[in-house]
Image 1 (tube, rainbow, N blue to C red):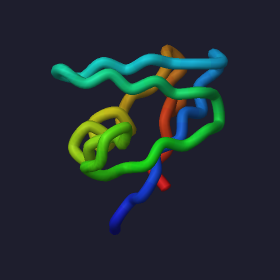
Image 2: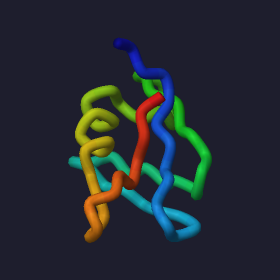
Image 3: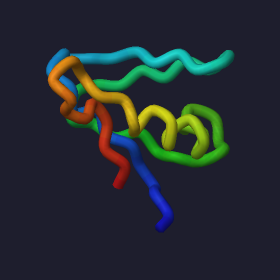
Length: 64
């Protein structure tokens, strides 16, 4: 399955993710594109981020 976007669905209005040397800024219920262009989330990073969960075990991000 190929994913095109990653959406932040956590509780805070915004969320900043830093992986390796990249920083991604997410807004609540808004998607970022997945790809290799500038300002897009790298596919490997998106797969890693999509596994993150909050303290209750709910997902913070959804791949679409």
